[in-house]
Amino acid sequence: NPNESAIESVADHSWAVAMLAISIIEKYNFLNKYQYLYEQNKLTRIKDLRENTFVKTLGVIQHVKSIKTKNDETMAFVKLTDDISSVELTLFPSTYQKYNHLRSGLVVIVSGRIERRKDLQLIVNEIENI
Image (cartoon, rainbow, N blue to C red; front, side):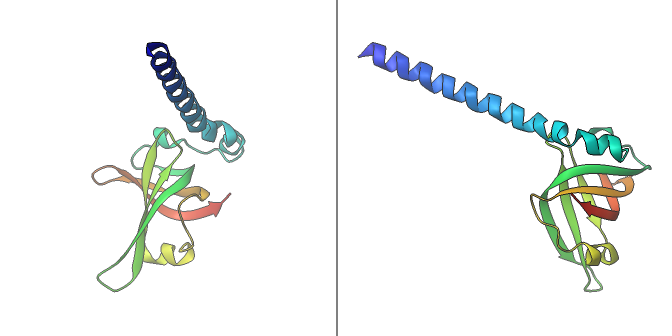
């Protein structure tokens, strides 16, 4: 029946639109949910990070990759996102020892210095769990 297939097509389309709307709401919900922390702590949004500055920013950890250095110490590279932008965090061995509990999904405030290698990266001094 051609009418049933048209109805199914509209239903599929409506479902896709609803999922997209939820995705957009979730994306911008992070910044709204933590707006008070940006204001209270004078945090910089990830999209506003600039090279050669000392910053405090907020985000959710998306990925943690630990590696061994030549001296057999462990350090880590962490992807931090606020759902609109992301930045790579670098935790050198002495810093990573303090914060080796990091895992995907944690919301954290991070302070450190912004440097540019290929892209901007934040060399971590401190991390505070939210």
